[in-house]
Length: 203
Image (cartoon, rainbow, N blue to C red; front, side, top):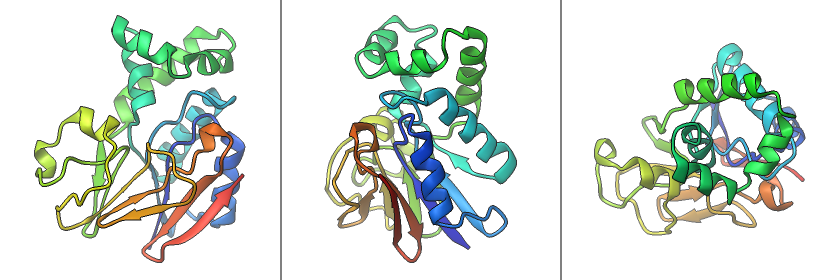
């Protein structure tokens, strides 16, 4: 079985569809893992959320929560989260829903109920931003998983695969792999195939 891993889609629906096609994604053979930040900055946040929902419900994908998704979810009841979201690309997400508030509400509730903080296998830990070094997985803080940035050894005996910190090309740091190649900023969206480490990109 292949693990196909994508992070930080940020409203770039066409790039997501392109890398899935390039990798010949087959739900009966592959495990697709999405590392969060589905919304903001790019033009098609609404469509990306709908696509993620379809991939999870119909094709068994695993969807992990990113910091942008978390701000979107919490903005409905947390004023500070709303302010932070507004500073981090909320306008493009709101525009993508074209004032259809009922659909936005449904999508937000779906994200709240279906996104995980991490996914663990025998060899890998998949998470949005990363993990605190030398802290057991069950004691990791949610804030760390959503926001951390560092290149140190995590030291949990598995490879930590994450996004969140934009890099020009997939970056390998000791026991970490960063696959956010800046689709939100006009860069490419990257899909990493494991265990082969084959890379597929869409610009």
